[in-house]
Image (tube, rainbow, N blue to C red; front, side, top):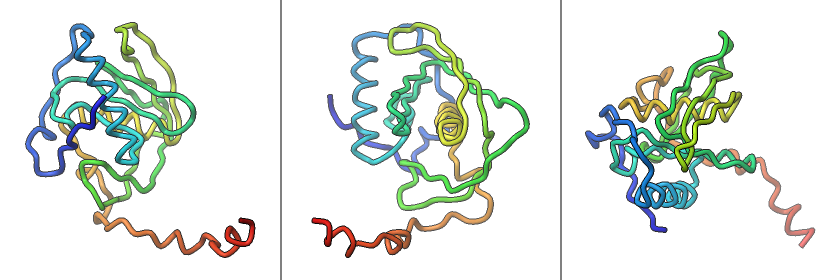
Amino acid sequence: MALRTIRVIGDPILEKECKPIKAVSDRTKELIMDMFETMYDANGVGLAAPQVGILRQLFVVDIGDGKRYVCINPTVTAIGEEEQTGEEGCLSVPGKEGVVTRPMKVHVKAYDINMEPYEFDAEGLLARAMAHENDHLHGVLYTTKVEGELEDVTYENLEEYDFDEEEEEA
């Protein structure tokens, strides 16, 4: 496995429509493993193929719930009218975040790493991640959906953590 270079906003590849994958080769499996490694290294929860320069319909997601998702040629559709609005960031837009409204629940149909079809419903953070990554496959960055302005990522919430308490326990 190897770390891939993450393309950043301004790179024209991020604005292009991706092509479907017809078959999973050893090279595709290597790409998938590299994408997971790259995503983890960058502290992300999702990564789409165009973010590493590959114009194919593929993304990976791991929100920390014990499941790793590989989505090849996915369709992501909203379930119902309920929405969620919250902070969102992107590995291709480093150091920034913005408020985005997405469906609360989505239905995902995709192929896995072995080109076996599967489908599932997702809600909350997983639904947000699936919708966000799926947008990448259609040349859409979350920055086009931000309500208001993009903000610099800050670490003010670390002030809420009581570091002295941890030191006392050690």
